[in-house]
Image (cartoon, rainbow, N blue to C red; front, top):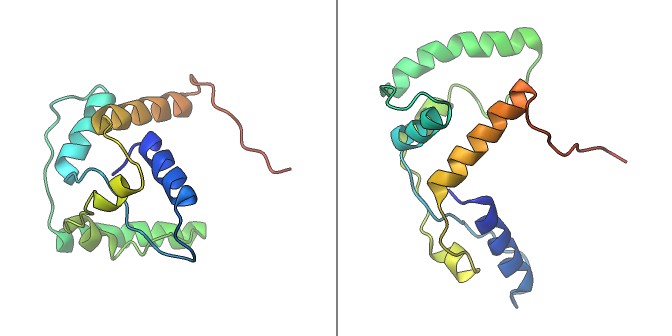
Length: 137
């Protein structure tokens, strides 16, 4: 995970780098398991202390059958195969912060960033936040 500010720092660092050509660089600053992340999300939604129960991937896949059916009925093409999502969510796919730091990322408050993002998302959904519009010219 990275905050928006850290993403900007890394992009700036990469743009100003003297490296030539293309190089895929894995960037991340904070590694957080799902239960901690969901705790922050629930807190931001006013549901602090809500119990978080883990679920084995094979159990989650059973529930994905309904999701896949609904997507097919609505003509939705998912960006990720829902049947593989439970496996992905079960892995600890953590990225070392070395690369981001080399490109200029500095420490930030990831928990506050997640909290703020959820708060603004809820407000936008409820129509109580004024957001900038994105328009194609």
